Image 1 (cartoon, rainbow, N blue to C red):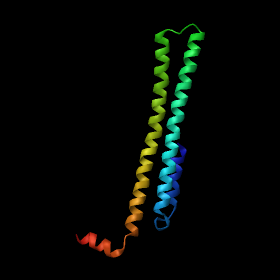
Image 2 (image 1 turned 30 degrees about the vertical axis):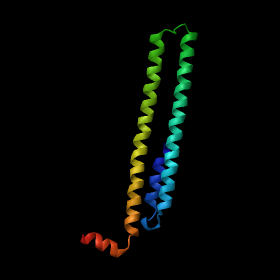
Image 3 (image 1 turned 180 degrees about the vertical axis):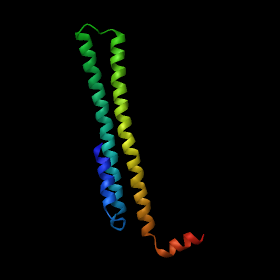
Image 4 (image 1 turned 30 degrees about the horizontal axis):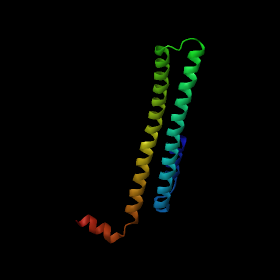
Length: 120
C-alpha cells in the first residue's frame, strides 16, 4: 500500500497552519477505502489461487487431502503475511493523520481557550 507513505509525506511537507481538518478527513477516507479495496482484492486472489492450486494438484493426480491442505495452508499463510505487512503500514499512517488533526485543532483554538485550559 504505497499510498499510505505518500499521504503522510504530503502532510509533512505542508505547513501545519495550511492543513485543513476536511483535508485530513478526506485523506483518512481515501486511505480507508484503499485498505478495504486491498482486503477484498486479497480475498479474491486467495480464492482464485486456492482453486488454481487445487486444479493443478488434481490434474497431476495429487488431489489427496494432504496435498490440497498443504497447498491451501501455504496460500493462506502467504496472504496472512501480506495482510500483516499492509496493516503495519496502514495503522501507523492513520495514527499520524489523527496526530495531525489534533495539532491542527489545537492550533485553531483561540488563545483565551488555551489560557483557560492551561489555568485549569
